[in-house]
Length: 617
Image 1 (tube, one colour):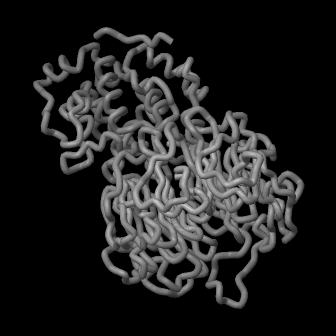
Image 2 (image 1 turned 180 degrees about the vertical axis):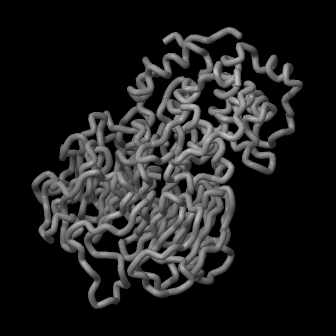
Image 3 (image 1 turned 120 degrees about the vertical axis):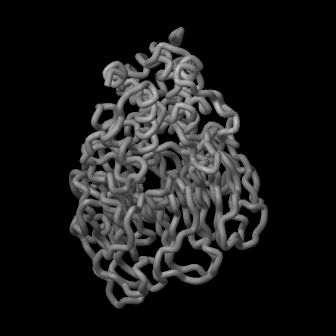
């Protein structure tokens, strides 16, 4: 075989947040955390990890030592990996794991033992992995998996005469992978074994324990949960088999089960769900094939189905979606990034929050811009980072929250700054510059070996698609066997089945199917643009090694703490890649099976395979 040699994209708004347990891998550590549109104030992390802020500042929430609104970005601090903000309180995690806070402290939500507002960052604690900051309280997961909270504690209803205030961090539980809360009134946490726990207010059954009784300590709800998000009085959870479950308040069809009946225990809504975003009146979900579905009230066309008709079951809106965010604040709108990097928006458009140049309500998706890596939207304005590292903003601007030096509303995107940190930065004259520093040497080696398809030799920190990973697997088989894929198929007595899938006829995908590298996503679907996770990568790597003759049977069990949230079909693959040094964990003895996998991670993974040793087994 002739070897080839290279010649040279849900951010979450503060009003509905989920903290994933972070990967230690440099490529994924700050993905989705570099830009934040909060309630009238904004933050961005630049390429040098400096944190910048602008907008409303009446409680010192910008952290610049003043209470003066800023209409242009001002630098706050260095070495920042992650930022989270409530309406007037802000948290930042530095590169050394230390947590810093500033802004309003009425309920002790800063966590420094006082109720004194802070106009500059103060250090709260060390060894913090992730944080979620709300209006009146804060949750943090430390690197040892322990969950801590402070501020107004989620231990009862708002009508209680007194809700406890915690002015310093208090430990809630151990072995936590992620936590979700809406306004701090109630919270849900997934433990590393995949079990879901809930506590706090429960008057609409939002905890899911079969009652409407408030819980002052965590109660177990269900097992095998991969992700959870909660908003106001209802909750959505995706299980490890990709099924979506919902419970809580349902008068406005927000659960999507075909009724308006509240549910106090989880009910199954649909299968094959990759991600979900829910707001006060509606829900949107991306399935594993990249299709977007929506249901709920739809008063402003926020579902995107061309109507304002309420839907009590999911309706399909569009295909090839990479990420979504759905917002409900004085109205509703939804924003989606497609797999080609294009940004689409629909719903309420007051003050130009959609960015289409008008204030006209849109009942179907309208395209806003191209080459978008990530987006953050809140209240009535939006910020987006393009793949060249430039920051753009549009919508309402009374406090200068757009950062363009004015208080003028913008109906279309305006450029704010360059050099913003993101997955997908690239320099067109040198595609390798779009890779993380740690990956560049390995990518160069892989390019010399010739198994990296031409169309993914750039934007290396982007999430890889199912089709891209499959095509690279086929090219790696050619490299490892020193034969063309047609020769490999012929030697095994195999051939491509042109009717294998209804959504692709890509010859490499059909070859991979014939070799047993992939089985598709079911119902004769391959879902070429579907999201790709670490557990999918592990499974397909194992199958690729089997295709070159490696014995992959009965790999020794791995000891990852979060193996409980992996899909049942992924266990052998995870064990195989761990035992053979092909894929490592993401830190703190976690594998993060549901986390996205990037192009550069995929390339390095294939480079880690000792194919000669495996082929001799």
